Length: 566
Image (cartoon, rainbow, N blue to C red; front, side, top):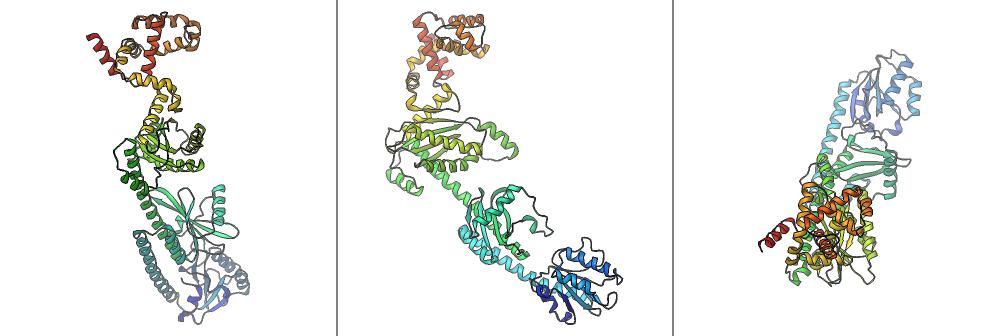
């Protein structure tokens, strides 16, 4: 760094006289040198060493004072006036003004050429810049090597603090501190005030400072730089200094190198984390699917992923109902190759971990397609309320991240014992499917609470049962597809109201005659009488089995063909 004191000590300026600001000669930085005459306007920038002959002042003290004030207000480091031609001596009033403000005024003999001064100052600046550039490149190489060597953010921040001689704080994308020794309370106090007040970024004439936000309070300056990779926000670097401290160009370069190193670290860490998550996900899915894995293999993987397989778990499966529509909107704003759930999975996992810690239960987590698969620890104190409390926490926190997202949940049975992930998963999946088809979306369904549905589910897979229900169901399904009359739901309402036509008409919002027409159509299509108890039972049973969703349309066609063939 070049200071005014360094320029004054140049052999060329031995005959010059410092008229004011002697106490700050060693504190005033010089980044440029220029020759300026009145008017100043906006031709002088901060930390500039200004040379002038005073040609526009014509020995008028008021005009000269106005010129000095303009140079001072521009943030110049010093003003050197050549005396002997247009100004023979700097007036006392001007010196007094400068002295009161610790502004450096220098008298230079007319014989000293400005070109020689500019040459010497630029030579010094170039020498310093070369030295700074060499140091900057060295720091950059060290930081890159630290990333390649697998150093953590704590080691990186320690090195940066040593080079800056300032404390820093590195925050992740959530704004949580992850490294650095800067006093967190001070950093967040200044940072939060800025966020709260929504101040605009301070304008800066420095090309590098344009990326750095300076935020100040009564005691400290906070220099803030966002960490981004491919336009995605990954975190922040906060540099804390005293209120009177001003970053120089060299320090700005160091902070930018630190930002790039942090961006590389976050990128590498994200790749490693995703790879580990995929491996853990594959391992859990293999156990869920009942693959024949050796105990040694399972224990090795459990140790690698820090999973405890020696305790009972209860399976919970979540399905995001409106994920596709949300992703279509998001894709228009931010196209990506990731599917919907994969984009959200890291956020969802963080919320699951938080919820599990809140209920003090261990948890395993996997995902496949659009299904979230959770295994929550079962303890002696576990109840249905424990699972509901866990899901309440998840939904409440996910609502803040994805306000429009709706989840349906299926909860498995936990009496299968330790390590029986496959059975618990199957029951949770069955509960989810039955809940979505028979109760509706956005619900929580527990396998143990679906006894009637489980009975129907077991009957639905029986071939004889499929043949029995094919005859009454197929005509209703075909008619509903062609005429959109919804005869199946009409019968459900009629049966639910114990055959009361008036009450059913009110519930379905139909005219009485329209309802009677539908009921006669049901009888004619199925060949069953709605006043015959046996026929009524058969039709109700057939519709209940069909509503499980286990039997597909093709199976009904096949079974009916078999019956006709007989």
